[in-house]
Image 1 (cartoon, rainbow, N blue to C red):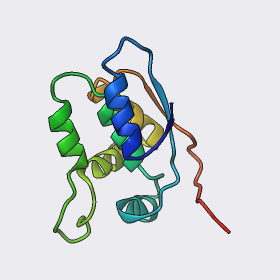
Image 2: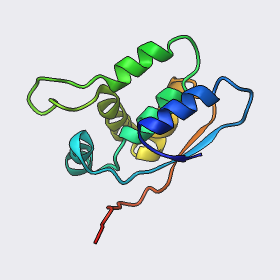
Image 3: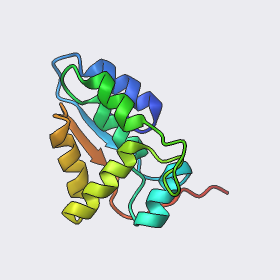
Length: 130
């Protein structure tokens, strides 16, 4: 599957119930909202779409709790207002392990992801329209 955003989350959540080998290639181009902070403040690629895919493919009965936690958006707090817990979690792992690629791998390990979540790129990119 190739995608990003809420639609990808919904499709992956449904597909993981079947005995199939899932792989998703995720867009890494978002530059709005909390993703802008992830890009500007931490120098990382946007994590929102990849975070949603990881949560969608998380195994076990904790799916609903994990989705709520990783999707939780702080409504107050200097510097973190508007950020999601999951984006901050993955930024912390990138700092701990020295790369965003390792952070994605470790998050998938921690959440026991069933399938593969692959960023379309690790290069800094921007969408441009004319």
